[in-house]
Structure formats: C-alpha cells, structure tokens
Amino acid sequence: MVTLISFPTTKNVECDFRVVRPRDTNRMEGRKTESQTFGTPYWTASYRLGALSNVEQGLLRAFMMQAGDDGEVFAAYDAMRPRPVLMDTGKPLSGTKAGGGAFNGDAVLQTIINALLITVSGLPAGFQLSPGDYVEIRKSPTVRSLHLITAAATANPSGNCTFPIKYALDLQTFTLPCTVHFEKPSCTMQIDPGSWQGPKSWASREPSFSATEVFFS
Image 1 (cartoon, rainbow, N blue to C red):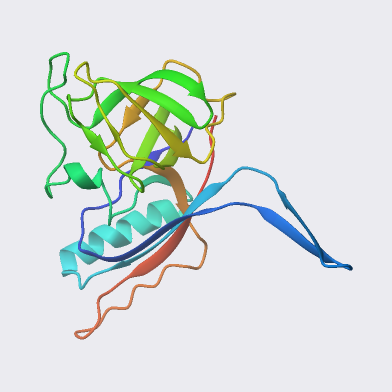
Image 2 (tube, rainbow, N blue to C red; image 1 turned 90 degrees about the vertical axis):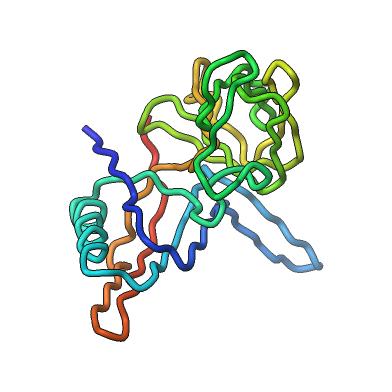
C-alpha cells in the first residue's frame, strides 16, 4: 500500500519544477533530422531550503528518512507558484463558489473535451487562470495528474471554466468523476537516491534534494 506524506512547511529559497518529455533525435546525412517523442511526460523537481532552525532541520530530516530512505512518495508542488498567479494573495485560496458553498481551491472535472482541453466546475464566478498556472486532476489520493494551463481563462457566472492544458491527460486512467485542485496542485514524487544534501553548521543550514514523479494506477 502506498503511503503519501506531506512536504513539511519550511523556508523555501529555490525550486526548479519542470517536465521531462522523452524524445529521441537523429541527425542523418543530407541535412535530414528525425525526431520521435515516446513514453509519458513526467515532472522533476529540485528544492533548496533556506537557513533552518534545529526544529525545522529535524522536520526535514524526518521527511527525508520517509521519502528518501524508505522510498515513500510525497505530494510535490512548485513552491514558487502554489496557486493561480492572479488569485494569489499570499494565503490559501478562499471565497465562495458561484453555486454556493465555501471555496478552498478544490473543484470538479466537469467535462473532458479532449486530452488537451477540459472544463472545470465549482469555481467562484470570475476566477482567473493564466498561462503557466498549474492544475491538478485527481482520481484518488495517489493517482494524480499535474498540468500547465496554456491560455488565459475566466470562470463564467455559473463557476464553469474551459481551458487548455499541457501535457495530454491520460484518458485511460483519468475518467469522470475526478476532482480538480488549484491550491498547491501537486503530483506524486520520490526523492532521487543520493540527492539529499543536509549540511549543518553555524554558517550553513540549507538542505537540498531532487525528486522525480512516480505513477500509480
């Protein structure tokens, strides 16, 4: 059974969050180039944390022992863009859904138009999305798909919003019903073996590590 652990709340200094798209390119005679994409795109991340107190250092060390030594997975997100940029006040998302009820960043996948275009419901009216924002589509706690939004979009008065995503949604795994998440949208990752660096001195307490997405179904 997969155990999903949470990333500890600590000071974050640097975060590099990006997609790897498997691709092979051959350069042949006669100025011919042939490229082929294959496999499933996956996310990678590298984190470098700020100067930590002894308590924070202990929290991160305990997290590393679970996610690194024990190979458990954690919910990884881009700490530099934890919510849609135009809706980011520096605090967790809040407000009222267009249809009533409190909004905390969670919504519903209403329609899968195609693998690159979806409609989401359950948003506040006027909720704004921008290119480069993240959206998480979740089938279960450990079955998640993280995407970038590629065009600006705004929720209509009913709280519905249609927007394109990158990369394609796996339509064999993610079928309705699914939930959608805009507050710390994440994917499941494991810490890369040997990547943990945790210097401890009076002058330096800035641990770092990298991680790679893993898939569950």
